[in-house]
Image 1 (cartoon, helix red, strand yellow):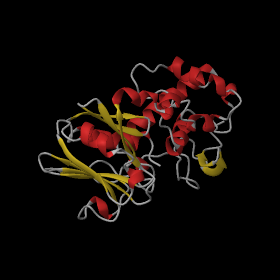
Image 2 (cartoon, rainbow, N blue to C red):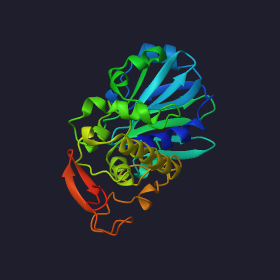
Image 3 (cartoon, rainbow, N blue to C red):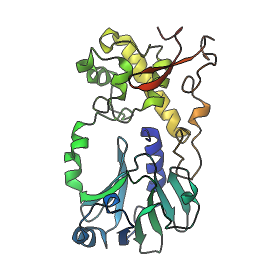
Length: 288
């Protein structure tokens, strides 16, 4: 599953290419659940509409149209968005669909624009989807109602960060970081990396963390995620950036998938355990 930096990298790529484009056609191929929309709505609210903005909320992409509707897109595990026009790029699961002839056997949705360019939604495992709905109703989606605040927003303060964890006092901090209702978009890689940066043991209960430790974790999480976006995300199995290149964040990771190596801070061996239902990497010496 992509994490916030991977989806943000995709958003930035699309945002440079598709705003202002006029949609002339859209169809699904073989997999109606990938495009679960009434044909009448597609004809009325997609065809002839112009793309206004490409946004992101947590791990979901939002393409807003001037018809008052939006395309809500979840790439899930193996989704791709591939644009073909004057410029060409692929974003998502790195298989040959990024560079081959399209549509192919993994193509689920095709969106055509008035200038002849096309946007393809490919998904090998068919878990992802492209939903058309009124823009005003997007905030009312169950997921949107439950998801926590964006950790990188300029007005998201250390105090607000600490308050988000208040109701999880008896939960370990690693699990709380992964809870999308607490903070949006944090997955396994960046949870491990931010805890290492703040020198916090993933076993610690939320209620045991002091104010200063929360402040360190806040700064560490934002630093890690900003670096990941700068580097185009991680290469963790499935995701590449908006130019079809693998993200390079893993070249800068300090603990994730570094088990058996020396901690870059103290020289102690990094270990991997099973914690919070996920493989967890940390330094037992400097993460007390």
